[in-house]
Length: 451
Ligand code: F0G
Image (cartoon, rainbow, N blue to C red; front, side, top):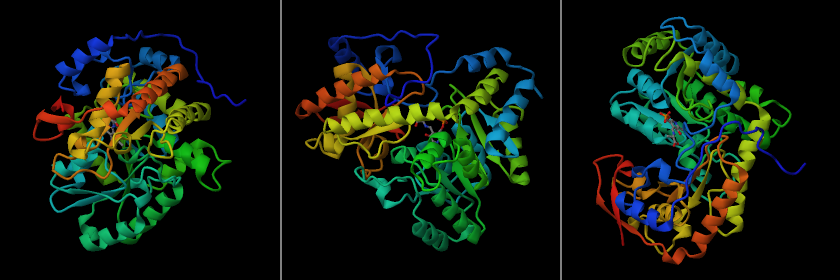
C-alpha cells in the first residue's frame, strides 16, 4: 500500500477552537506580536513545540493508574529502570523532571570556568546550563548542516577535523566531555549517522574524553539511520538504538520528546563515581533516586513510552508524515531546511520574505502571519531567539514542530494550504521592531510593533 496511515485509533478527543481573523488581530496586538504570550486556547493548530505535547496511548494511561507512589523503592521505579536498561543498556539511570534538569546536574559536576564542551549544535537549555557554570559551549556541526538546501543525509554530523583542532587548541584536560545531539534540533532536526558517532568516539578515545548523547529524539535518529545509512536497512530500530547508546559514556534525555510523555527526563551514566555524585545532586534538588522529580505514575508512562517509540510502524508514520508536510511546502515553492527532519519542518524565512532584512525579524513576521491568517502557532528560530548579542545567526528559520500522535493528515493539509496562501501574498508581510525585551532569552517575553 502507498498510503501510510496513523497507526492508532482515537479514543479521547480534545476540541480545538477556531477564532475569527478580527479576534486574532486583537490577540496579536495584545500579546505584542509574541506568540509565547497568547493563550493556547486561542490557537487552532499548535506547532510551537513537539516537547511534552504528544498524546499518550491507552497503555500509558493504564500505567498512570498503576503508578506506585511509594517514596522509596516503588514498583513503578523498577518497571521504569528495567525498561530503560533493556533499551539503552545503561547501568546508572537517574529520573529527572525534564531534560534541562539532567543537564543542570551533569554540568554542575563537570562544567566550570575554563572548561569547553563541544557538540554538533547545543540546544539552548544545554548551552545555557554549560554557560551558567562559566564553561563555554561550542557548535561543530558539518558545513552542510548550515545550508538549508543541502540534502546531505546526515546533516547533524559533527565535523571531525574541527573537533580535533578544538581539542588540541583547548587541551583535552579542559574538555570534560564531548556531546552529540540526536537528532540535531537547533540544526533542523537532522540526524547523526552511526558512522559519525563511531568516528567521534574514536577521536574521544584518543584523547581520553567521554562522549555523551543529548538523546531527546534517539528513536527518530535511529529510524533515519535505518532508512539512510548503508548496511542498516535490515536491522531493527531497537538494535540501532542499542548501538547508539553502546558507543557513549552517558546521555541526557528529555522524555517529553521520544519518551512519548508530557513530563519526564533521564540522566544515564556509566561511571560509578560520577553517578554517585549525580545521585547526591538529584536528591538535593529533584527527589530521591527512585523517583527523581516525578510521580510513580509518570515513571510508568515513561516506561511504556520508551517501549512504544521504537515500534517501527509508529516511526514510519512519524517520519513520513513530517516529510509529507515538508514535501508539499517545497512543491508550493516554500524553501525549507532539506531534507525534512524528524520532529519538525523549518521554513527558510529569508527566502520566504526577502524584502524583510534580518534586523526586522523575517521569521517573526512569518510567525505572526501564520497566526493571523489561519490560527497556526509556530516559533521563530532566528534573530529574535539568537540575535540578542548583536550577531545575526546564519539562518532565519520558522519551526513547525509536530506533536506526536496529535494531529491527523487533514490538520496537516490545512497547514499546507494556509502556508501556501500566506506565501502567495508574502509581499504584504511586514517586519517588526522590538519595543521591550528582557536581558536574556528575549524570545519568550519580548514585545514587538509592526513596521
Ligand atoms: N535538548 C534538546 C535537543 C531539546 O530539544 C530540548 C528541548 C532539551 C534538550 C531540553 O529538554 O525541555 O525537557 O528541559 N526542546 C524543546 C523544543 C523545548 O521545543 O525543542 P526539556
